[in-house]
Image (cartoon, rainbow, N blue to C red):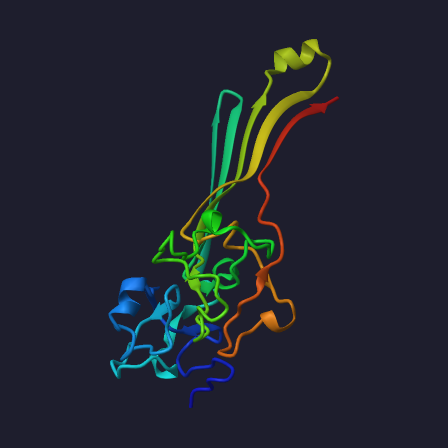
Length: 238
């Protein structure tokens, strides 16, 4: 039988996201009209609005379901080398697909370093900024413990190197065996729907923030993303 405590389900991967579906943020007009009373009676404006998946008129553990897996379904890479008259272009593209994970940038109401940002930067719900995507900063605005999972798939332009090998005639004049100049870039661009710095960043918990009462990770992002770097060099063989 399924083991809800460890999030182990028969026929499913070991690591899965088992959570609610978020369908928006409770707005002032909805609370004023009483739309929440037969759905989520304790809801207030700016709270996370969750889907009543089983149609029983209330939000409880029965509305959670398996939304995806925390390990990639597949990974891949593509390397291509193009050469022409001493010029060589080497490109490496990396892709990681089919995984989901909790996004601590959304769940902890802070930025990637765990700092609080003003609402105009992050977009959290206020009376003046009635977002339907980001909850309010109230401590009770996520009372059901929604984990704010997102698709963490990405495709990254990992490495690009452009080099030029000087002709032998020039090398002979310089009295060297070989001369090559190159320019390379690493982690140049990432295509992803992830909100935040980097979908590949680890999530490191701090005390009680690591796991909430529903077993969802709500830890801070505690490290820097993959850095973009550029290198220019000269290889000389005597």
